Length: 119
Image (cartoon, rainbow, N blue to C red; front, top):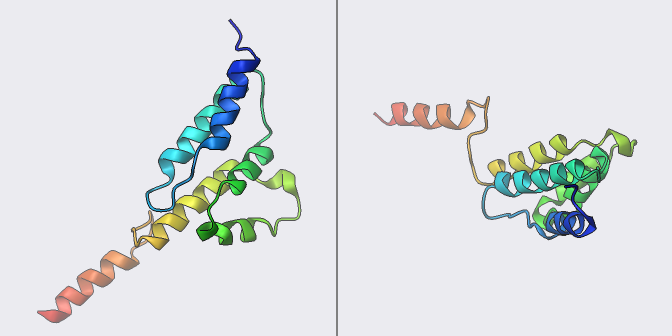
């Protein structure tokens, strides 16, 4: 059958209670939040993308304030997209932790170059 109010409340509460970590990769938490939003949509309780994006912004830790500040410069709230927030959060974590992001050659090439120069 169709999910009742209790199931919808439980899904939404889990969205609000899910923590976006700062000390581990945030992709798992972001995927979990997205899955709950999808279940809410399936239960005929769809949140517009920009509302989901604002909820994600509200869950960011103070170490990610720069993301909220940059995205907050947008003039039109309905232009906010969940994937834009998710991408910014993942990039922020990868940059803070020195991970090589897709499409970047800088870190690996510099390490190889310095190894060659030492020989």
